[in-house]
Length: 159
Image (cartoon, rainbow, N blue to C red; front, side, top):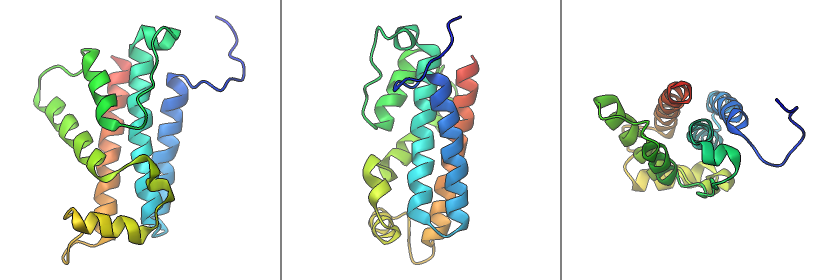
């Protein structure tokens, strides 16, 4: 096996490791009441893990024959994972798909530039934040949802 040299191209392990770091970063930001940062990094963790699954399971992507240029669209990444045949029909697959769809409704790439107030207002308009559910509670649930997707992707990477 050739020694890996410094490159600007990430591989499956890089995406996986980066995703796990972003999830840890998100929790640190949550505990510091930096909710927009928490949401940004937790969503990025989901993106990274979906990319890791594709890199590890799609030989054409891993070899460079096919591009993983999906932008930051979590739905498109999930479709690519499903196209690999990794999401066999079962209730857990449906739960994973629903969770990713929900995360994708709340997260977008440029959220990394947004303030917590911006995210809170956007989430209030979507019903995630209400008079009875604070931004802190919503961000915590978002983090847990992202953590579940990351865990599921870990399993998919190993299949």
